[in-house]
Length: 111
Length: 111
Image (cartoon, rainbow over all chains, first blue to last red; front, side, top):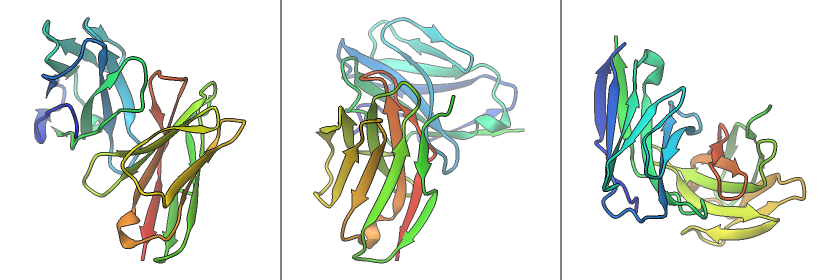
């Protein structure tokens, strides 16, 4: 079973920020939080990951709470092309063969 | 720099047949993982190959086997196909335990 809990679906208006929450209350100190997204029938695309600190790259920002039990992926200016299923995954820092994908959050960006 | 590539893109087989799927990792990557994604679900981990050996295996029967070649490319073999094997098969590569990058997938239909 996945170690994370995400809402089934969310909507966002084009041009607005999309904030996708993820709960991972059983996360261990040596586990990363990873985010991937999957656009219809394509392979999952890596977005961002973090351990403790907030992270930002050209695609998104990742905010991790101080107790590390939850996180939020932020797409600052959502476009129609950001419509996808977003997966939040917790995995060990020392190996990557324990990635368990749940059902993810289906984000729909509307014009 | 080519990303992860998979072949074929689509495949149709009948029950009882055998199938071989292929994956070429991203340049510089030495680890290949395979996932099965049924319609409407998240990817499920099948197994991972590193240094030409199966390092970790998910909850899949022995009908699923694999191989990794000296150039780090990999094959997934499925014997005695049944209807439930119809899915999108994803290959992901990484440099050791670092971030996995996914290929576009092979869609297998078993009739």
